[in-house]
Image 1 (cartoon, rainbow, N blue to C red):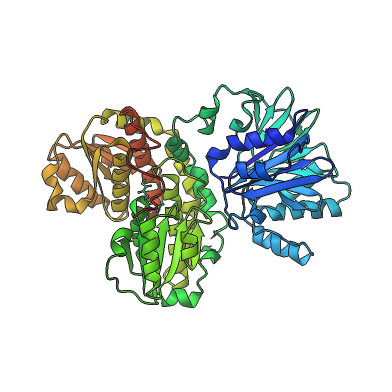
Image 2 (cartoon, rainbow, N blue to C red):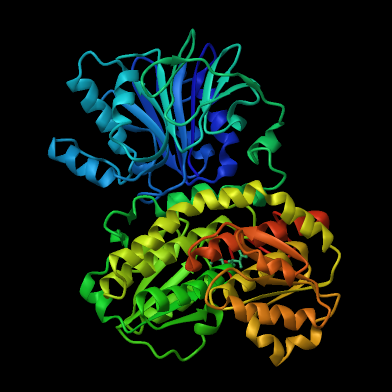
Length: 609
Ligand code: F6R
């Protein structure tokens, strides 16, 4: 996830900005840059580590005002020209977030003669500011930033320098974090407090649609109407390590909590609720190609494979297209029957999984069109496929995939609705229903997070068991697989995910009072069938934990504990149930004192076969 920093003060801004950027490294980045004002705007940027950036800044170079950035590519590859700051004449901008309407703004700016030197969404901010300052001669930089906030849509925390106001940094935020540090030797701005904790513990958190004007003599805060506002100063008690995790004990817990934002960032700019359709230009397939598809073959490993299994139900239900899900390590040595009318879809958060890469290469040798869903811009899969759909979950540091999984699900919904609409399977009314539901997911995930204590209690109650079963039907079958995978990888408890109807074909022999069963029993057309399966395991003395909808009062009659998700569209419940199961796994591992962020024997990116 990108990080922004800024500094004005009596110290050398170059040193402070570099040291602050280093503190943001944990967020993940592929390039970095700084702009320092020392008479002119001097900008240095490069792909790679901050140590590379240090190498290109001339020795002895100083200044007292500057901004800096670590970039995690979202629009445009990790290349120096895409690194921030972005400039428009006498203006320099760093940005964290996603400008959803940047294509539209870019086209307009290009018609007005602006030339773009990057593929980023951020560059439109620099040019828009330049245009505003040029047209509205009475505007201050602060006025100009406030003005363009009415034009840009999406999420942003921005810091801006302009040579017309050489002793100011102007900042603004909407849906991306921004915090100001008040030090003895200057003022700081950053995406999180870690960046400046070594200089000051006095921080002011900026709220959505607020603006900040920093000068050598002080910091002023403004609301969206341009009125000055007073803000509370917080004294940060965390040390730097705790601050990297935003106070959470583990990256995994932090990433679970980031899901309201990662879900939103993944669908941002892709939903036209009014028209009941999805905008998915990145798929690069025209309507005829989509209509002529015979089949979709999803290729993935681990958690991404579980997402693919949810995808199968979505593609078949919403798009009416036959879908297979293949384990990449098996597919690559199999004898697949493929042709040009088959779409192969690789799902891989890292974009580097060796088996997935090999399998997708093999599929292309049959003439299939290959599409990737990945979280990492510039990863190998993006060069091995015809088109790429990026989940915008931000970097995931915990080895166990959490926010990237739910982001993959969101992308699969969007893809299925898009293909279903083109193929005439979905009416705008039906898709609108689901799209409205998707937009409610961030708030609903937040509700689950707010009530996580019940999940923690349940996890602690069963933390000492040796075996767990997870059961579900239809879409909830892959949810049960993912619940079991999450639990086994971080808590080291043996766990099995099963299609609930399969129990009686073997695993029922293992069910006893020592094997708790998690039943994903959300409302839908298989609900009653799952209730029967619950009775089956209860009859064998198993204790049952149900994941059920908020309004379901009936379920309490049949089970020992209920973990709730908000009521939602039947097809969308996997996103919400998965968050519950992530928390169940997390708190179980915590109670067992396991190494949560780095489980034994596992790696974040599996680049070997
Ligand atoms: C489990 C997990 C793994 C990955 C798998 C594929 O939490 O993270 O099962 O899902 O190694 O990785 P990607 O998605 O990077 O291809």
